[in-house]
Length: 90
Image (cartoon, rainbow, N blue to C red; front, side):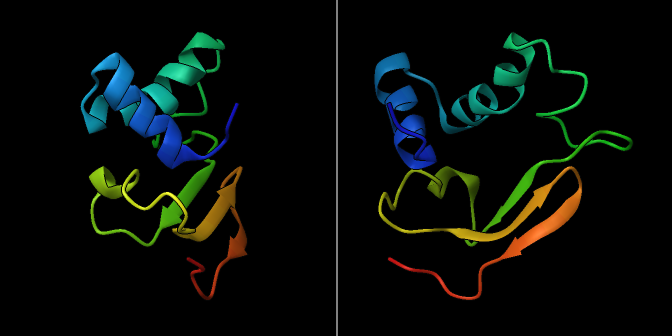
């Protein structure tokens, strides 16, 4: 079991034959939907509760590329900024 997003996405590509967008949807909206939480998490929209990560990458398709690198730049929980990462550790 892992909570490493890069590994989860790579496993989705390899074993489920998903393209990067489908894999990202699987770990966000579709996961929330399977838990009957689709009315709030997993969607960016007005008046929705927001748990968001801002990452230091130029394209979402690069999320799985660097396994050991921490790409996190900002973390929002319930719409509130709770963490800013000043430097990235490889």
